[in-house]
Amino acid sequence: MKALSDIGLVGLAVMGENLILNMESKGFTVTAYNRTVNKVNAFIDGRAAGKNIRGASSIEELVQSLEKPRKIMLMVKAGQAVDDFIEQLIPHLDEGDIIIDGGNTHFPDTNRRTAYLESKGLLFIGAGVSGGEEGALTGPSIMPGGSPAAWEHVKPIFQSIAAKVEDGSACCEWVGENGAGHFVKMVHNGIEYGDMQLICEAYHIMKSLLGMSAKEMHEVFARWNEGELDSYLIEITRDILAYEEDGEALVDVILDTAGQKGTGKWTAVSALELGIPLTLIGEAVFSRCLSAQKDERVEAAKQLSGPSPVFDGDKEAFIEDLRQALIAAKIVSYAQGYVLMREAAKEHGWQLNYGGIAMMWRGGCIIRSIFLDDIREAFEAQSDLPNLLLSPFFKEKIESSQGAWRRVMAAAISNGIPAPAMTAALNYFDGYRCDRLPANLLQAQRDYFGAHTYERTDKPRGEFFHTNWTGRGGDTSSSTYNV
Ligand code: 2AM
Picture 1 (tube, rainbow, N blue to C red):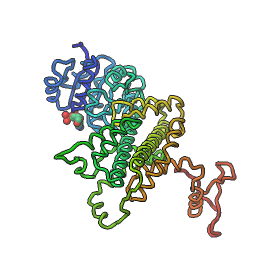
Picture 2: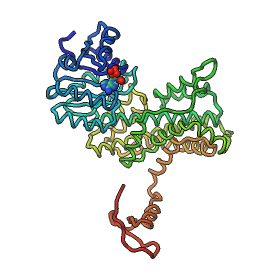
Picture 3: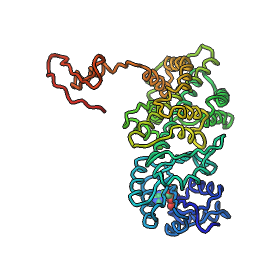
Picture 4: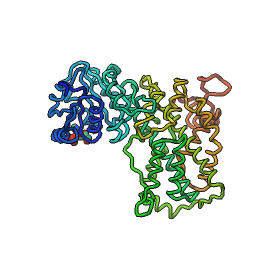
């Protein structure tokens, strides 16, 4: 073993252990440490036995075992534990040493920690790591941001342990300053919520409108996975639908209440804060919330009636329509997610590499799909693309699928089958391509009751008018403001 380790890793839960084993398998020497030190010994004697992995029984020992500039990756519970370790490490570190937080941290914490550690002459990286336990071991998607000066030191390790796509490129690139990496990881998770919800809506429509069995739907998803929908989530849906227990599809007996850990909510909240219509992901989060109100829904189902689904068209043609609706809605979801990232970049002063982000999501993570190649190409062709829907490729795609998309939404609505994410996507598309929305009336209403003023189509922008709509009240307008 080398006299000094290339990197130290703190936090020996499965993700941490697997990342260490992954690093070691790529030729790096790693020091392992954990708050509960007997876990270090168990790891060194167990999964790490005979490998270039050394255990440390104290923070001092960990720090002293590392090559300079020291790189220490924390894989501990997000929140206070990260701050606690940072405080414990600081007195032992030298200028230019690097702390990396690979946990599921909310990006404002990473903004704060980057500034704090840089003020102490240290460097910090907040890295989103996606791909779960298996990804950690065999190749995760890694989204690092923080102190730019740290990247050159961490890059060889991160890029060699990250997932690789067919052309050999690593699913890990520098994302941007301070919390940019954790922000992009958060958006990844939001998009994951959206992709999952869209698949569930397609499933619900096939099941309730076409009356298809799990086995039949398995075949549809198997077919879909061969084409442009080819992705990890379609693939696992295919396999889930085929999974039987005692001759019955297991999915049919799983309770319909979704859990969530909060990253979808963070994404939606961030969109609200930045004023970006992230409607599809928002609906995906709310759909999980509605699903969780199981008892209330069961009661409501007894009291509130709706149409009984009837389908008398061409089933195969409708399934193809559904496939196109799914693609179109997915394009809108990514378009919205990218607009959110662009706005956050403006707000926080990040220089985000949008094509590189698609590349990082291309492998190793839950939303990996061939679709991301098209997104990468769209941003490589035009890095300042304001909205994916305006790239020639996606414009053509959505135009060619919108007839099918509208037929599916009309069928879902007239048959009373909820498809909130797919319909939200269509409403966004129709709103985005509308050069005159009814907000003229809305402005009139605001001016009527609150003297909030309005601009006019026949006057230059920036000139504000107030009307005394009722003849009562005065001509005084309230000051203009934007939310
Ligand atoms: P432990 O083994 O000592 O519990 C995942 O939970 C990882 O985060 C584990 O390595 C765990 O250490 C660590 N962890 C959780 N909460 C922590 C805390 N408050 N301080 C330090 N480590 C913590």
